[in-house]
Image 1 (cartoon, one colour):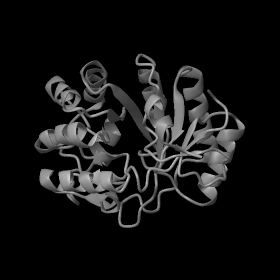
Image 2 (cartoon, rainbow, N blue to C red; image 1 turned 60 degrees about the vertical axis):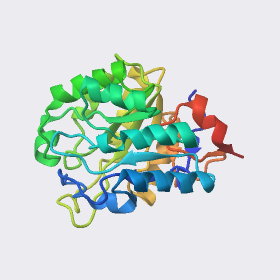
Image 3 (spheres, one colour; image 1 turned 90 degrees about the horizontal axis):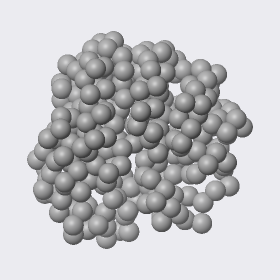
Length: 285
């Protein structure tokens, strides 16, 4: 399982869509809603359906539904449920979603709509949740939602850890790895702080390469059956080139999204969250 990492390039066949347009109630210190501008802007169920039809016509594989969260730490997806059901039934596209914190009814609603993958942020720091992300839930609420989404949610769950979201420091991320041992995930996706101009973290240094390698090594040791993914959110240039090289040299990464390093592997044109049983159909030699 731990040989040369698989390469994932989502754009243009697996785009990310913001179903809230440019709106976000949280205005997290590391984003301030600016990342939403890099997504396809969708603000109504009809527009989502039209977009998915065009995507299918262009040979698209699917899309990730994302957007701004509300103060409860949730993506307001309810108005889109019928459209999601329609897209799955009529267009047969893969659909993943960043749902945020859910209750049982919401998790069941997502599962029954046909959503394939729930991409769940495992944020186990009250400080980050309160003072960085400005949400109402605490880390116990996140743990409860994690259990709910695994028990009642979509068939596939891909946990995400945003490393360095506490102003570049790494601490709670180790607790998140421990919490995931109970669920034996097929993949764990690491995202890494990117300092963005116009945010309070614009001049924060991302975590050091050595600290990131240690974190991946801990995940490898504690999650033996889990593929470790280096997600699309990370600083580009020498930083990511060095990180990728170190992780590959030590056999600590199984999936890399849009690699900076040249990797002699076929490309999979989907999000790195897809399980192999699905994603490997879309390999381009």
